[in-house]
Image (tube, rainbow, N blue to C red; front, top):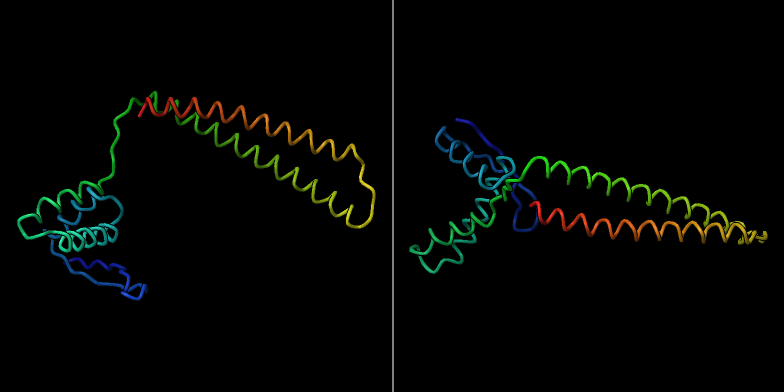
Length: 166
């Protein structure tokens, strides 16, 4: 028999390890639960225990238990989407582009923030600030804003495409 250790929360919120011994038939059943609910063995046991406990507390009687239990398991199943690989790869590439665009804008905003902090420190120290430096920050923020607006419109088109593919 194989032993599986499961971490489960106590009533007070702490975690406890629960050791469970299972024979081959029970391990096979656990694998089936895991296949339906996803995650690893521990996740499968935790999910199954939660489903059964909630079902027992909600079921009006044992005659409704099977129906309610079936509905609860179905609600936790991972959704499997069948989609054309070419379309999925196009979407993946587009999403990679979106992520890169946001990363670039994050860096640009960090650079503006660094420049702004430097100017703030100089002003706090009583030094004069060149108005050209302030205008440069203002122009850079306008560029970033414009780029982000274009990206938002492009992202909306991509969201429509993703919805149509999936």
